[in-house]
Length: 288
Length: 221
Image 1 (cartoon, chains in turn brown, red):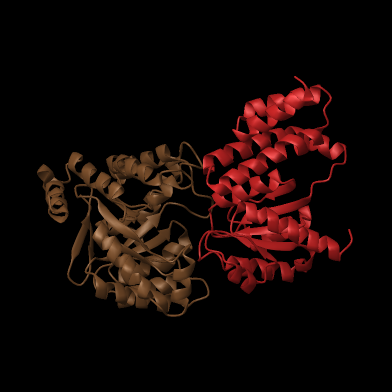
Image 2 (cartoon, helix red, strand yellow):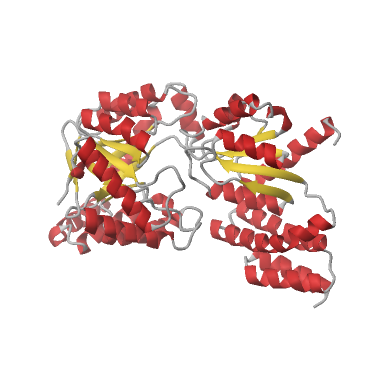
């Protein structure tokens, strides 16, 4: 069984097909948030503290940190943010950027074993990013798409997954356990059959390749009403198909609880002890 | 059916995205001797405008907009050659594409629907469009406006690369440049030297119309 081990200075989180689902909190990200972007551009990182607290309280196991603000020095900003987040919480971090220099700056200051988000199956991206992953002993999220559009056929995504795993393990000496594939979850509102393809990709990657998987789970309900309900239904279906982790907003109890309940039924929460503990904690908090 | 019933039917069925019925009604209208531009301007375009308005208010969702757009596109395929024959002018030609390195197209496609719904002719280059491809497509299609779409902060710098390619090819001033996409701001649009920016699909239509008017006021066609 392949395991992906992530660490902060003091805490370890393990992804695996035999493990409870790993929740990667997604909100430490300025994309689409004008005020947050302005603050970061002026060097004001204080909003990060509130976002970290909200994701941790919601039940995040790992935190995704993205500092993609246009017209700024992203490497410097990302390094600062990572140091700040590590001062606020002991959760491992997923370092999120498509700018190679930013990933490098983030990895250089990170304490522990990070998850890097992300690389594609494109040769030049693999060549740039995999050496960094190896050098800093990190794990890597990889997307099975290349130069063309996102492949709509399951076969193509599985084939590109095999390519990524082969290149990373054989050419760069990265452990297969440290490769986390993003099977590409697309919005259901734009294409009615897209989730069925993604579930098939998940099953095949789990059964034929065995690596861990993660994806941006909020994306699936884009453009639809009552998104939380859709997300809460989609995640247990994806987990049953082999998804072992997701980048998601943990502030919504409905969605987080759906994941925890699925863990019970998938046999990833022995005797439902985590579920029972959470129930007691909730009772205690509400004073009943 | 009376012409009024056909127009009302086209409007209603486009609104709910019933493609096959829209096509039937289009045929029925043409068969009854109705002008193609009547079907377009008195039914299809007003219907798409209503779709856009509902979407903007949050009453309509992405799939509803997509199927309405598809229903209209089906009718347009039938009407376009007829409109060309009768010499009906579109209000302008819009060349659209998602920049190189970026595969996101939902937002771009929604904008295309709204533009077509407003009477623009849209040429869509798809996703991952390299600067040189924009240049050759501008030379080929001679659009009034070119739109660059980017969904990622990391692909937004392609706007500048596209602008440079247009400059180098000597066609920068022949076309209005608009940029857009989730992370794009007016400030960023200004920084890359674009002529226009809009935050969403219906704003894009308004902005595009205004930019076109301004340009035509300056240079008599």
